[in-house]
Length: 290
Image (cartoon, rainbow, N blue to C red):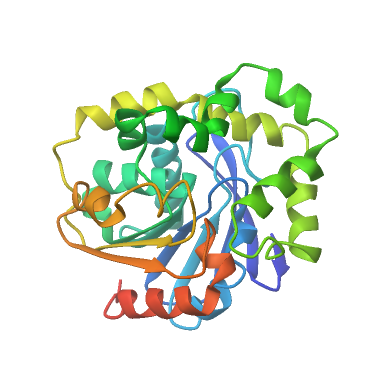
């Protein structure tokens, strides 16, 4: 256990792996699930604000940050089980759940597999795996090149090793409205995280579960998420807001939907437009009492 300025870092064994998570504040539980190429540090602008009213739990996903990086288990059903097991250990039955990017994929699967445990759901800048696969064409494949590159066994790890800084710089510059958004301490923090043993392999393993994820999503494609759902996305990100009709995409997934684009924003709304995102989250979470 270690205190940091965001809250307290904890390590717990759940679903067979060592999981790291930040725990901050008191009240009704709100869980934050980060995306790629981030860690739970991605929520540094949300945790101090949300923890004034709620108990905020922000894990590092399987394969990321300080959480264990096993060779297997990255299909989203099992990653949702990681969260369920973590909550069981903490004695938490029901949550409000917020996920970005890969974390939104885990959150979506959790909301479908454990509907009784989710009071409300937020998904940020994410097109569901099944819909990406279903609609894939040359234009989408070009925008989602990294999906395909990350699927290649071993090669990404070899090419990225020793070049973590350049690799991350490309994503953070290309994926943000202001290419300098992730810089200084924030950028250095992510570089350190991905230079850790197994970190790149863990992220690749998350993507390499794609075929299994698609099959899982097909199984219950006709089952809509019924809890209140807020979809947020960066209006200026070419691979999401500019390429997909996001209200239509999420209306296919959720029956009780609010869809909000964030202007002058790329793929990382929580980092690029934190004040706007925090206001939307606080409004959406109003009334959540646990």
